[in-house]
Image 1 (cartoon, rainbow, N blue to C red):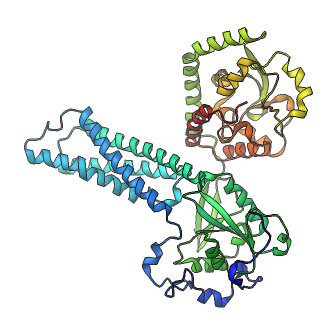
Image 2: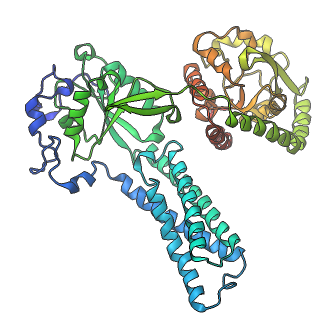
Image 3: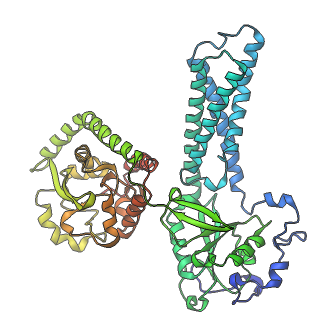
Length: 523
């Protein structure tokens, strides 16, 4: 929907010169939601209204998670009972055996639910995106391990340690597995427009528009902007073709109500005035609407950002990227060991591919090209040959058909690609020989893709990609591959460099499997 500056229905009046379009009278007496007992002046009239949310999709999802977690705990008990020795061994009386069954079939599953609830694993803020949900599940599993160990020592229970270990490990694995499945289902729902948060963006138009573009790039987050409320420069936005309706000079909370927005996001410099932000939070009390702040600091992940309160002033502390230490050592060990094992395991496939390439067209089996690696050092990148041997000479004549921008040449129906080469590219098997580069320490399993050395020096932001070794797969590959623009590819690579973690690498490897199977963006 494209529109210019407009006012919500019913001719809502406000002062355009007052931040967020409020007047003192409106702050004190605005009635929201048609409830005569609820006045949004910072003192919620009824405590129960604090639990009522403008959007309640998460309640159904939370209920589904509770059911899935309970099922996981019960299945873990079934697995333990069937895989370990008879649970009756070690119990002298029937009462002890009955108490054991009561514990593993009722008390332990309920304890799992309480542990998950206590660690915040049902917090709606972490549904659908990021690692925080699974970190909290892991904390719950550690708590259950400590709880069961403490109970066994306290009551001197003569139970099988193997049975206890199987129950706890199986439950943790099943809970995580079920939650991954639930997250996939939630992503499908959000792509269909369900289970989303309707967001009203507040701030200067350029800042709000940047946040709009960012959240639209991540539909899995479930944030759908429905309007922009400009706090300054309203006249400059007039007559612009905007992606969502733009408002100014009205009461922002009433505007959110008219748009049925359940979340208000204050963008960039609009959050600088602490008094205005505090009053807006007061206005939202009891309305069931969320207030979030989107600072100008973008593309920095949560582990690097910490809130440091000083006398009521929340300082945003940003740590330097950590591309060293124990985690980096583990990454290097996993790279070399996994690649060595992969080369041995895939050697029959390599032989079959070599025969197919030789049969299809004349030329070598492998194609080696100079690429830029860590700290600007060049190396020969190995790939299975997918083009005819005169491909590089023919590229100049095809430059007008280039379907991407930046330093890469991409063409969906490239006539230089052989028949076998098309299949190798669709399945990504042509990249497998780069395991040789990983074993030699020139590449990593995960990292920014290596760029051709003949493109010259990398200046500006692009050069920051060279702080880490290039990878066989990376964040841009699992986010769209060749379908992405050059700017988006660079942005994703820089995000990876600035926010690297071992968990991120494992996630990218897991997502790579799904991307390769879907063959999305592979040509």
